[in-house]
Image (cartoon, rainbow over all chains, first blue to last red):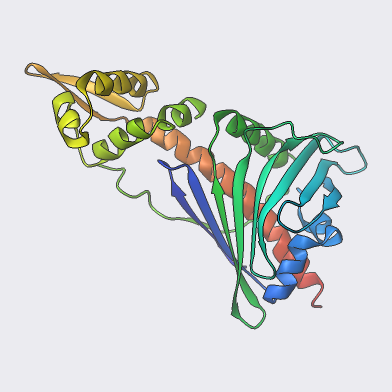
Length: 168
Length: 102
């Protein structure tokens, strides 16, 4: 099982995650850009993701809800794609929403996902998250706790790079 | 964590924190290094120490400021839990991709 690499920059509040996946770049791209695929893996375990809109083009809307299996979605997320380079890069700005897809979160944050084929059948995913706002973080934190609940602990090696320049 | 982020959101405060990463400095030392006015530096140091990001100690007639590691550790561990969320999610994506190969 491939490990997740995490690079954190505390001052700029940026997190970069990298992980290799066992499929071609095109296959991994499809897993991020078709509703049936996304619903199958987005999770968390024990929760169902319901995609309402997935319009993968600049300015297009990605709108989905997440809730316990068998129940109604409890959390709605809306993302607007800012840049789409077919097969290689997705950028979007995500925020909290409701069932109608309304923009309820002016304090959204920016995400970029790059798809890099290392070898045939091995793709590296590079995700960059930029946390810009305080309120947004508070909500993400709450959401993170929700997701953590009921999640069967999936043992993955998280290799953390040492914090640069902090210890002195 | 939220307080830490707010305190770091202002560019001059971020510059002060970055400067202090290299070691403790007096107010005058910060003023000289960043070419900012002394009252402004004092104002920013007040916000940073209020958020627990820097601490001051008296030395002769001067106050020497240095980074307070605990707040950075807190932010660091918040980012770790965020990364953990994604470790699990990408673990599911990995399993999903393996499934359709078999």
